[in-house]
Length: 144
Image 1 (cartoon, rainbow, N blue to C red):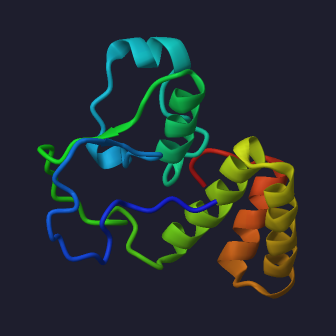
Image 2 (image 1 turned 60 degrees about the vertical axis):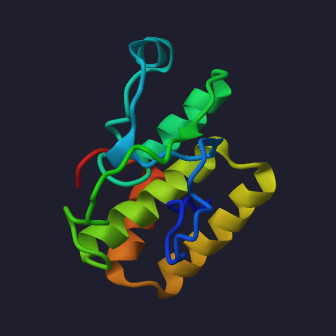
């Protein structure tokens, strides 16, 4: 239940120069036809921040749409710029939303793995990650 940005920590040696299908498009750089929103809805506001783009991409693929990486589209984006990488806010939403998205879409075996991980976090994780897990389990959604 992880999504990664294409090319992170890779040297660009031309391997990104062609349009190709991709399992995930980052929300900071999506171009979406209105018909897609009409069919599958908007980004899920219950997630508030982080992984709402993953949820959207899964729903789009389930509805039969293709997700494309287009190298001519260029954007400069600071990863976790609204919260700071590793901040409490970042940890909270990434932890909570990873569980929520995983419980929605993952195969049963992965759901059990997520439950084991959640249990370990409740027992020995940081207070912010414990709160995130508990909020995911009780369905406390949106901005927290």
